Length: 275
View (tube, rainbow, N blue to C red):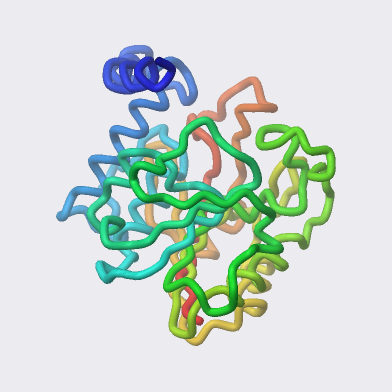
């Protein structure tokens, strides 16, 4: 019954978001966002390297992260790990690029939705110490996940007090683990919020030095690096320099929107790292 109610909500309430002024996280925001993402990732004419004017207006960074990931992921068959459960939505799991892949989802604690009927394998563990053998995956994706590692995950993700941490460098252990379980030639698709570094309890914003620490720890044979930034009119292609002072709107701790009505991160960096 819960799934039916959720399906009805997502199919009927997206119109409410623009009707009430497109204020992030208000009524209709989530179904409107998911509908926009679904349209984008299935649009053969949309190019992540040349975002159109107004793209993702008043939507959070998922609208660029998912588009970047699906346009970067090869069509070929193989094993893929979703490190952080960013793909655990039916409309994403139905994407054509995932149909010939053996998908594993690894996250800290069980979630409400699970899609075993779609052939997904679920593992609940700390990404700094996974259960997989060396050289196992062809691809790993970890979108907006490692910024939470080593920090206070009891706010939203688990009631386990052992996960109330304050280790700002904890993400590097996960990067080492990703490298270990990737096959030689395998690719890591990674994104984090970017800009002026700040630890906000349950996550942190990465600056250029921290991005460099990811690359140095992984030691890739090839790097592709893309920056995206939120402006008042929507998401745009950017650079490390232009996005270096970007900030974050946290709906959980802030009462008032910024003048740009950003929904969350005002910049993200997306890294494709080849082992």
